[in-house]
Image 1 (cartoon, one colour):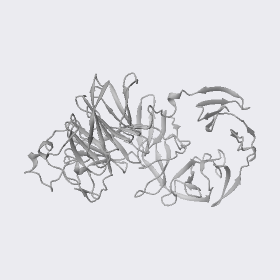
Image 2 (spheres, rainbow, N blue to C red; image 1 turned 30 degrees about the vertical axis):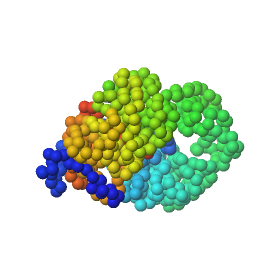
Image 3 (cartoon, helix red, strand yellow; image 1 turned 120 degrees about the vertical axis):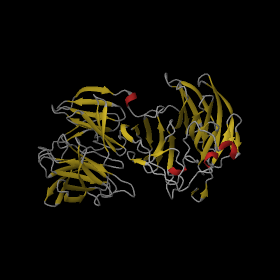
Image 4 (cartoon, rainbow, N blue to C red; image 1 turned 180 degrees about the horizontal axis):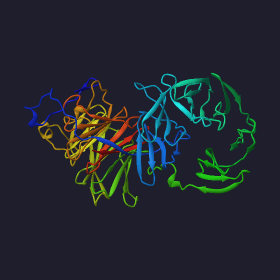
Length: 527
């Protein structure tokens, strides 16, 4: 096969030389994947995207999946009508109706808004295809007329505000909102014709008159010191009625007005929740423990790769700086730390018997360590040099490696020597198959691939299934071996950006996939 014009040579096992037919058809696997659980929540750049349904389900999104999570029963349902990142979720009109926005990459539908039923998960309406630019960042239903109207703000340079009769899929009005980022939009609670938007350095009140939106600007006083602002939309003017200085340390990320008039504010940096009475005096204050805050790093430099010892007692973690760490999986204590080069360590792989650890680096070398004491002692054996590009994948029995320039090399790990004999390597039964290049897996590559489209592969332990993750957010399930060009596969969506890794659990009951930019982990049941 060829990738980017470069030949990739693979040798078939001896027992297939006489019987192999390049035109033979490969059957789809009889088993399939069903999305069972989604780990993660998109909170880094979104607002107003966590809601509680009357059914007790919590609704939020991550990657291209909207999650309906029943905390008491520990069950998830998933709405997968989208196929890329959502940046915002609007409020619900009634217990059954939800609205989500859609932000799509090239070769997909343009940004749009989907109204769907949270009971059946059926899509009711799709609006705005061809109108919204880049993404939809804010959406809200009207309140005084049963939610018949919908307002939305897109992510164009002018951040266009539009109002829709979503049941008729008809746009009622639109206007350029602001050149600055718009963070929120909402209808007046008793007047369908009044909308408020706010964002960077601005607060606007809009009145819907026919097909036009008339703007009034909110005026800030003492803006340099303003930390918390409360407006009375029903009776007040566009002047600030009250300001509380120093309410939090750093930015305030959330405000919530309770039904009894209590205001709850949340700060980002100080991890504090503070409740305020009607006179804006502090009632209660609590600090969220650090372990419930952002994800913490455990090593110098960002973690890039990991591998479990066969016993499960320790895990090795490689970083972007050439350092790698071994941690006790029970106590989380640091067992040992080593440094090999100063480049990214892209793969950490223990041998099946646990006596060796192979480390693939972006300095084009594979570092081999002898392992003893159940994964607690490490002695460097040497390094395997021979690749002309960075290491991407490793598998054991002997040792096989793939690199960034599509090389497939074989090694004797105990001696760090390259094996060049075809007769020695062509019939090896590999303990794992995570390499994306090889005779048993070359059928996963689509026609016209540039060699970087497939990021990860994993063969099931029963050796009948093969899964891959690609740059298009898809998880594929193939029959194994996959030794025919353009082999068919079951294709599953969920991730919104490139899938960085896939792996079967030890009993092949589930597959786990990890996303890149969408920062999600998805658990698929094999059915």
